[in-house]
Length: 428
Image (cartoon, rainbow, N blue to C red; front, side):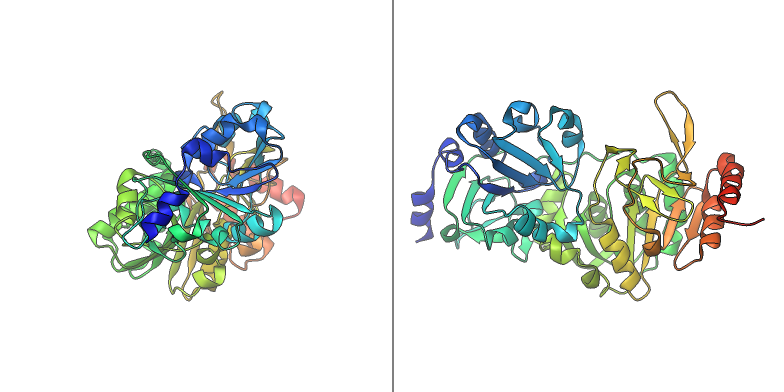
């Protein structure tokens, strides 16, 4: 009986933390699938271990090992997606950033970090002894479980039993079990600005009924997502299942397949995904551009930070300062290009305002020093500001520059034109 096996592997959270040894290479569940109490218990015994590597993405909890350099060399933390808590504690020195394409998550965990240990928050067992990774954990936990030499799970009754591929693990297949219930961390929803609404109003008429959608994070994404409520017969293939998608599904706007690498957002979203209506699968599969491209009329909508006049897009840094990460943006831009009737939109406000109230253009002759290219100009289809759409797909440089100037803020168009002339990008 699996219940006997469960009991034989059951230890306290503190005892489970002691099963981590020096030189272990750990993947722990990202975001809402992190075994919080197990990780905090591990942090409490940091002096007992050396060179333990902890790898995950987008933490939603201020773990102790973020908060002091004393953990360096004992518990070393790396994130593949840089979020608010990583930004807050980065200066303490124990946060390393590896901004990979999310389609490369498995390859990175296995071949770069040589992960040999899995720590995961899981649901209580079902009647057959399976524990589920929850809305977030399916993104990689199931893949890691196939090659990990040590698997320690924290059973949390609040972790939903989800549907999908590699979405659960049997009691027989773990090494140690501990129990601690906690509410799943939520991802707060940003406010939708007037600029977000203007950009959404430009994009929405271009999205046809029957489209398959992917929407990213942020206020702009929410403006578009909730604005799709007048469409019909939508489907979903997305790295992240969002609160706006829950809204559209409940309204019947999304009435076909819903495939995602993870669900992240509100408690309502976690409950919806836990009802088995969304098919979850590992992120390396979901974000495969060729799998994305199999969906006709695929629409990818993501935000970015800046763009140059030729269409190079930065979505993750402010100068040399890391703000976000590469994520799945390019995976989906490429997938939309493969799709029959596909469209990809990269969206940004036309200006930034700094703390002193000074306004600058987000469209510039060159990307500022230190800002990296997240999506190369050769992959771009549409770039959108509140002033319009620049269709850059397969366009020559001079045409690209003219179209980018046309969607810049009016106050900066003349200077951008002069800079482009001086640089030889356009002619009079």
